[in-house]
Image (cartoon, rainbow, N blue to C red; front, side, top):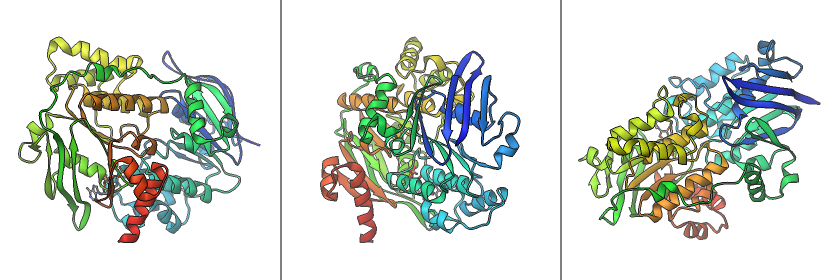
Length: 495
Ligand SMILES: Nc1ncnc2c1ncn2[C@@H]1O[C@H](COP(=O)(O)OP(=O)(O)OP(=O)(O)O)[C@@H](O)[C@H]1O
Ligand SMILES: [Mg+2]
């Protein structure tokens, strides 16, 4: 039995071919993983399947409906979680759930959902005040309400911490019936490896379809195989690092967080964050969703006022001399924060201008960055229309365009494809070798291994600090993911 039958589907946007003569069946009662490079056509495919976009050519049948002409009937049978789920930011967690339950006409029975998402203690918090990962979990909870026959999830695990990612998977597996069909787009290849079927898209075509285990038997091998299928990644020296023209700092301690605290009413988003980073170090601030990582980042670059404590960038106090401290800093926010209506090139031109890159060098610099980050074919595209992975590339590019000695990267690789993830880390490690200091956070535990030191942060406080090896030893674990989970759980027991 098929839930979806697609024959010779083509979808064009102007002269761009997003889906190219694609035929595909999606089996009922199975979980199918959708994988592909940024811009490969995953979101377009999902949106065409549910009738949000109309095909340029070809036919689609979904649960016996034609999404082109029977979108409303089809809607009653599906649950769709888009990349940016439409939470009502000025309603609380529980009000969002109530609202979606009413829309789907299902009972207000959220206990299991709240438990699975760990959102129970935050029921009365405004959705807009949730951390990135908490929002993602609430979005999934709303999508699962009413047990739809066909679930389409567009990268639901973006920004979700390793513990919650397992919970999310359990949540979907436990809450669906054996007849439910799931189409799950993901950049996590360990996730895709655990599904019944994997579909790899490239430039709008299916380049692999089959059981993940037929391609490789371990998740790591699977990742390597998929990377090969996608054409391999760039192993050359980072051009960004090579041409990074900056003045090496003459201080040894480039970044210091000094008893940082942030309170909202009686709630401590950050209770105490203290660490020191040396020149050229890659320092990872890791922790579960809502730990207070982004809040720390924001305080450290002067975007949020600490309740107490301070931070110093190159020895300059961010509270006393915010402009001077910030001039040493490139910051990539977790939430896309560039100008949506400006094109890729206009955004980069703008940042080059405000960061004072001389008019003579500006064009060459912007050209180089567009080239290195693979943005050439999108340079005239308004930033808000970019696929998520490309938005991330643009944000990263904008953060380092002025070659600052210190980089703050808040989940740079969330939502980018597996090849670009390796590319980003190639830039990060090469920059660090040149003496650039990097504070970074990620929910990919394989990336945590690239950090020189890690602070494991939970509920606003440091749980452990050390090299990846030290943390693994402390946790009695062989890999970072297990170390992360063990150390967080141990800290719960301690309390
Ligand atoms: N304006 C606010 N009012 C109330 N609580 C807030 C506000 N802003 C943030 N918080 C809370 O502070 C906590 C820390 O949030 P933060 O965004 O720093 O987490 P995070 O570690 O970056 O998580 P993630 O991994 O999901 O990005 C969360 O519980 C969040 O809901
Ligand atoms: Mg965050």
